[in-house]
Length: 300
Image 1 (tube, rainbow, N blue to C red):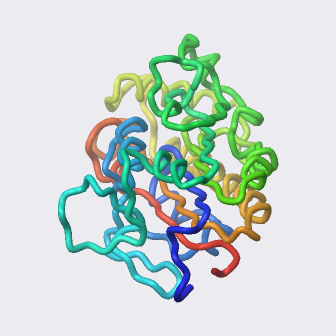
Image 2 (cartoon, one colour):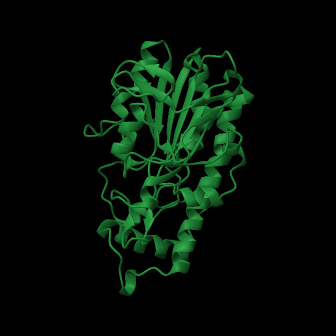
């Protein structure tokens, strides 16, 4: 990679929504691991909106270990906005403008996004994130649909963005250079994928977990979750990540000839009662600690 300017690369940016670092560390992810080692990182946000707002300004989750290695280069950060305060930290790519999408679009890239959690429902005028993209594709339930148990505890297939890797890759390859963003919803509750389908046990545990998410509190009585129950749910998120890894292999294979820069990270994690609460949107190490992989496809 010596002598090759990362600023001229196409980009694939993927967020694994709600994925815990410890789940990622226990999962079998051979395709993500081809990008580089799994890094333990700290997210700047505790839920989807602020975490992605920071990400789209170039502020990735920061590795606890410090620097990032991209091929033969070590950098403190991949992107750095010209609006950021002065720093001695070295970034691989500096950019002007308020967002990464604006920067790459101005420089002639095809910029497109895909999402699956309701913050990315582009049909909802209240959602600001998809409006940052010239082109956005939403897969998921409508953001204003009633949040009933029947609507939330469901099997998912075509509602997952990574079920559409062929279509997304084709859109990218129509352009000379591209920035593709994918919000991967498979790792977000209810964690259902072809690798982690609903069972009677999982359905009941998810209904209880949703009630705990809604209250963000520990519980006793009918809603209480045992350590064994939590292991089942974390196992579902693990298999949802492993399904995403397989689908990303398909995406990477289709885009590999363009040798894009690839960054895959979680936007935030998830608490399962470790500090007395469930879900996210609050400060706790299980929420702020996330996985991060980065590299260049095809050994660049």
